[in-house]
Length: 147
Image (tube, rainbow, N blue to C red; front, side, top):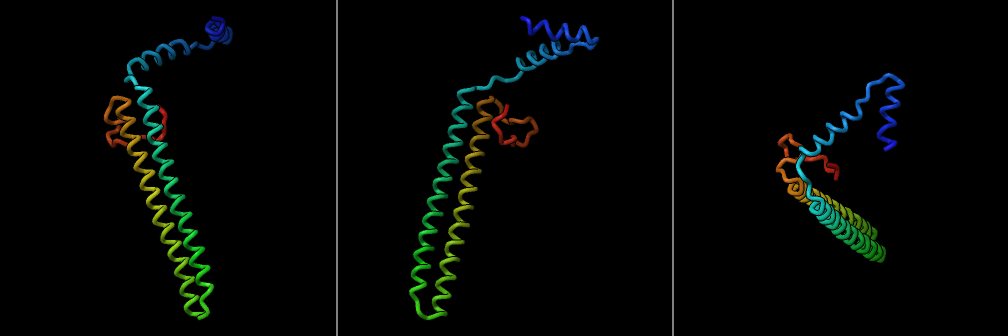
């Protein structure tokens, strides 16, 4: 109760108008007009999104590890080749295959991660009870968990 009296007294002494009371009333009435958000639904949507992102990361890391192992083995094998030109080609192929595998893994990871975020945006709309979460008609939100 002391906190509710203090701002009014402080404004009285300084001569400034107290807008806090009216803005609080407006905020609470505005908040009451907003749609209800299903909190459990939002929690589930976040868990679903983040589990999908974690799974994408695990797949990506697994592919990168296998690629490094394959590169290591190919380079080791290349260094057993005594013919300089054949060895040079084997070394080049080992690095080229590694690069292509990693590039493909990164592309797949980004696609999977973006898919998880798209599903989350759709789920978030459902939790908010509306079709367009930011009201501009494009169906895209900020990508954050903010309300």
